[in-house]
Amino acid sequence: MEDEALLERILGGDRDAFTELVERYQHSLIRLARYFVKTESSAEDVAQDTWIAVMKGLEKFEGRSTFKTWLFRIAANRARKTGAREYRVVNVDPVDPVSSARFNEAGMWREAPVPFTELINDRLANADVVEACRRAIRDLPEPQQSVVTLRDVEGLSTREVSELLEISESNVRVLLHRGRAKIREALEGKLKGGYSWQ
Amino acid sequence: MAMTQDITCHQAVALVSDYLEGALSRRDRRRLERHLEGCEACSAYLEQMRVTIAISGSVGPEDLSAEALSRLVDVFEKYRQDQSGE
Image 1 (cartoon, chains in turn red, purple):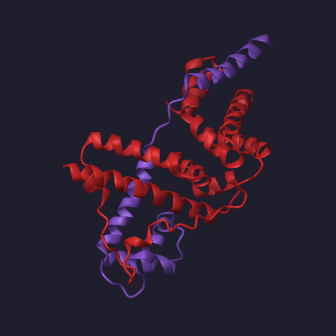
Image 2: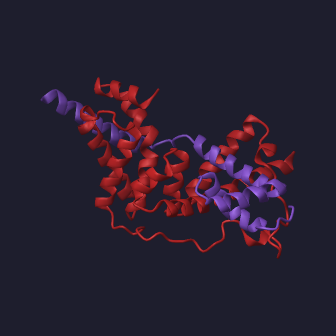
Image 3: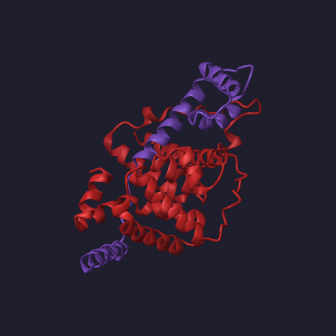
């Protein structure tokens, strides 16, 4: 069910609709808040405050933006107020996203990558891959985890992520690049491992 | 893994994410595309990156703990009470 349909039901007093909406966004709200605040529990508090603000403001929500954008803006504003901005300066991870060891001195692959679609070949494997991806995202350091969650999991645009986190679009892209490279590597490990069994 | 005159494979993979974001300059985009045309390995890497992003997009919401959910449902109940009290 679309967000907007759930909102209608929530306004009508439907508790299950509220639960469904919370389950849909709570994790991403915490990731977004975590970008600004120091601890997970503080991020959880921000997420809870966000839902209180949502309920208070729901009748006035006019749908000029999508609900998701509205929700994330509320959370970002609250997190920003709460947080000591420890990630204000974007840390540039010095580690090369694709290990230099994979290339020879001429900068060419020592061992060529294999397209993932050749390795993912049944539904069970697919479910395993999605789970491996979820774990890989969870293992990303901040602020990569927040950026990947908002951009690739939630599907916000780079500009929206940049506005929510108040970092430049080019910094969003740097963080995305590093985060995606790590997830790709984790999936490659998983798929190659699975592949060798067949 | 063909050798191209412009960029190496190592340089090409560094451009892939920005390429997918549509954020490369025209010159870099052309250099990368020219490299990809002649390089199966980097094309496979690009495909891996596309699939990685697609899979990230299919990661659904995580299950919430019963405790976390119950705290949030309280938010909702309080709202309803406030509404009916008005």
